Length: 189
Picture 1 (cartoon, rainbow, N blue to C red):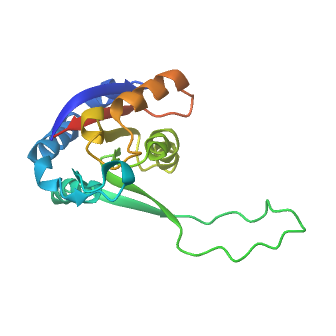
Picture 2 (picture 1 turned 120 degrees about the vertical axis):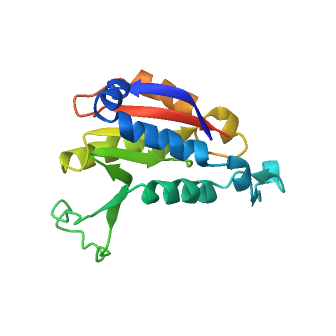
C-alpha cells in the first residue's frame, strides 16, 4: 500500500515530524510492505455489487496489525465503568454488561495510531473523541489515522468512508480546544 494523501489536523504533521519521525518511518514501511491485492478476497453480497470481489477490511487490518505488533507497537485497552447516576428515579435500568472497553489500535512512545477501513462515523469518532480520551488518560499526545482514499474505498463494501470526505468534514468542523494533533494518512493499493 502507498500513502497518497496527507492531512494535518491541529498541527498533526508538524507534531509527528518533530517528535515521532522514527515512528512515522516505521508506519511508512509497514504500509509499503502490505500487498493490498492479496487482500482483494471478499465476495460482495450487496445488491448493488453482488458477486464483485472487493478488498477485505478485516484481512487488510490483520496484515497491517501483524506488522505493527512485530515492531513493538502495543494495543491499549481501557475498561469502562459506565455511570448510572444520571437515570431518572422512575427508570430501573437493566444491568449494564461488564467488560465494556475502548481500545487504541497501536501506541508507541505516546503516539497513537488508528487504522480505519470502516464506516465514516468511526473515522470521526477516532479523531474527535477516542484520541482525546486516550490523551486525557495519559496514553498518547499525538495521533495518526490511516484511512483509504476514494479509489480504494470504491472497491470495498458500500458505506466505507474515505480520506477526501473525511478531510472535508474536518475542515468544515474546525479545531476545538480539546483536539490533539493528528496526522491523517490516505492510502491506496
